[in-house]
Length: 276
Image 1 (cartoon, rainbow, N blue to C red):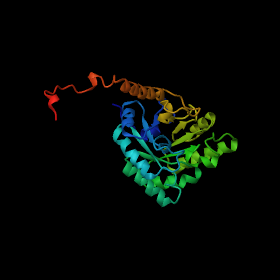
Image 2 (cartoon, rainbow, N blue to C red):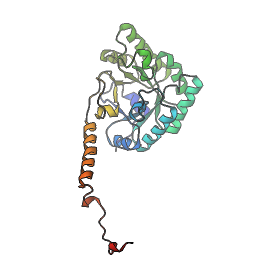
Image 3 (cartoon, rainbow, N blue to C red):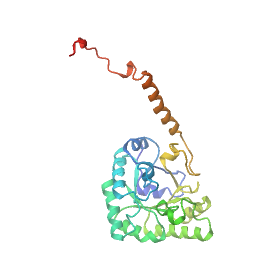
Image 4 (cartoon, rainbow, N blue to C red):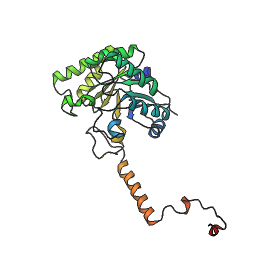
């Protein structure tokens, strides 16, 4: 059984040989599997809007949605560090609302920290949540909640000016008290440079191998989706496996080869023919 890592453990990984890993997870059954694996962290992300609820994006996921999924993941993965995502609208109204919603996700969800998107402009919010006693993971670069402002899901930080803005954001979040930062959808050389220039660890997704840690969406890396972003490696082809199993079941049921004798209860009942 693996030992659950802590916030100090994560911060100590900065510049180390070991690369802590994270995967998204949204339910008890899969959380149990992650807990039995070597993966260090789980993100209960607002990506559940697309993977679990059928939304077109992350906007529309609620605090209650996050809490519901987080508490079941925590139950299934007691030995894995769990991050609860703050959804769109839960921290951009007021500082009071942000702290209130962070408290709810942290306390009711039972997670080990919360994550929120945004750079320099969100640093005061991060500072307030940290002051309330909740560890915070930042998230900059391609931020799905505000992707409409970026013209869609596009790589960020490709110009020198944009790169400087991302570095400034990383420094602002560090100064505000975030203990780690997700870098999403940015050039690998920029992610490496940001990682070198801040003292807290970076978690990369579509940001190259120079980050301190790595994260992927489970449904993508397990091959459950037809299309995946460029940065995703499919480590399995569960879509083909699952579809094959479903169709084999239908075929055998129609052929009446399932359930065979081995899969049914075969107790003998004397006099059954006398039923009225």
